[in-house]
Image 1 (tube, rainbow over the protein chains, first blue to last red):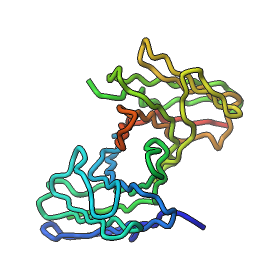
Image 2: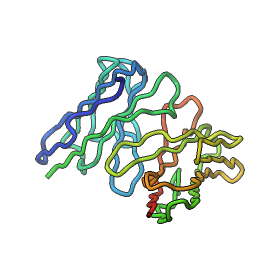
Image 3: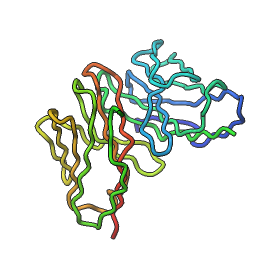
Amino acid sequence: DGGITQSPKYLFRKEGQNVTLSCEQNLNHDAMYWYRQDPGQGLRLIYYSQIVNDFQKGDIAEGYSVSREKKESFPLTVTSAQKNPTAFYLCASTEGDRGGEQYFGPGTRLTVT
Amino acid sequence: RKEVEQDPGPFNVPEGATVAFNCTYSNSASQSFFWYRQDCRKEPKLLMSVYSSGNEDGRFTAQLNRASQYISLLIRDSKLSDSATYLCVVNPEDSSYKLIFGSGTRLLVRP
């Protein structure tokens, strides 16, 4: 079955540590996205990538970094520079220019203490 | 002003009721509109796109009012399984890859 996988589902880290969240898709989608969701708030775009080896900052990119070396993979690194990293992180992908029809992975809940 | 605004609810309705949610958006040049559904602690899933002429999918009807810049979602004959948060989503530019998500309206359907 095609889909998007994110791992791990829950992640705990100490403050000051960098952590990388995995996102893999086998839908052959061109575009991939990372969002952050906080309680009672909408999804906020961190980074997105339209093609391999290219990505753009979203609305809240500070403290995060990404890479897109393969079409299938779009890992997100939460660095120690991110002030409030505890959140629900969602990865999504979309086919071509059908930006509105995004398919989401199950998400990773990151807790930093 | 938020780019996409929704009443957070919760809307608490009995099974079989009809319920409607509204959403307003601030960018008059917005091109595409969607409703997503998000179950508790799960990922959002596309429920339906919203077309200018309005569209229906079973018990769900979506409408767009460009003049007033609002989108609506009507759910008829509510089921217990409709309990979820409904996210209003706007694509501000036709060729853009970016979506703006509302914070969602929570629906609780009781027996």
